[in-house]
Length: 53
Image 1 (tube, rainbow, N blue to C red):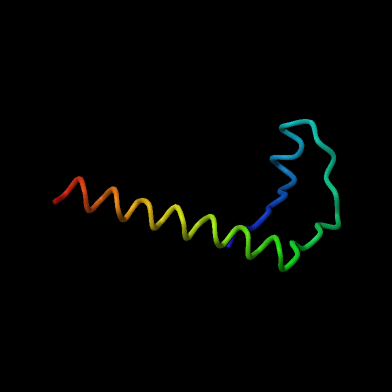
Image 2: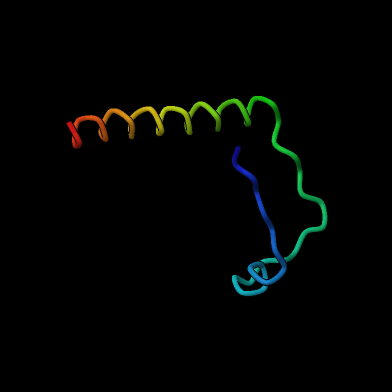
C-alpha cells in the first residue's frame, strides 16, 4: 500500500508547515492505489516476459 509520510525535516526543507494530524486514506483510496500497483506489476511481468523470451 502507499503510505503518506510527513517528516519534519522534509517539511522545513520545502517550506511547508508541519501538520500534526495526518488523515488516514479511506478504503476507496486504498483500493484504488492497490489496483494501480497491481496493474503496474502485471504490465512489468508482461514486458519482462517479452524481453527475456
